[in-house]
Image (cartoon, rainbow, N blue to C red; front, side, top):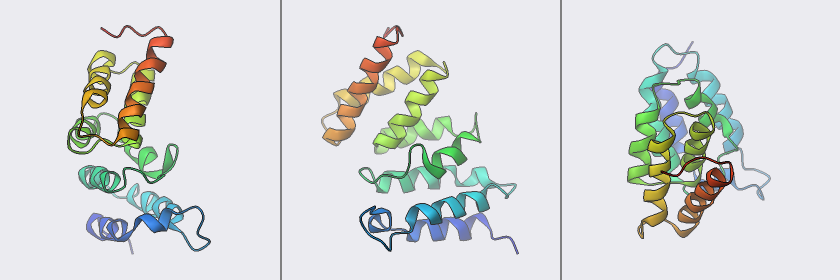
Length: 151
């Protein structure tokens, strides 16, 4: 029997940072995320979980949740429905993963100047984790080297 969105997000929210510790032989967070995202994609109302998925990412700003990983793949399959929540997430708590998502949008030539502004805001904010701020600067430089006008 298929589970509801609420049941799936409840299980996702039970995951802890140590579940993603690559040095731990018992860590199974990534495998479980893949299972949950596969399950989520079968639901007709999966987009209801977009805000919850971003809040999950925000809880783990320095944890490797994949490159791009199951959550990003699931969100990107909801093209046109996750982007505003991505901006809200970055305004609350930018992470290296959400910045990586922005870079993918820019690479896809989606609202390039608008997303570059997100990078500039994060790179200038003293409230942001230094590693996240550095990532924003690196993405700006990457896009500059590609020839993208930084406006």
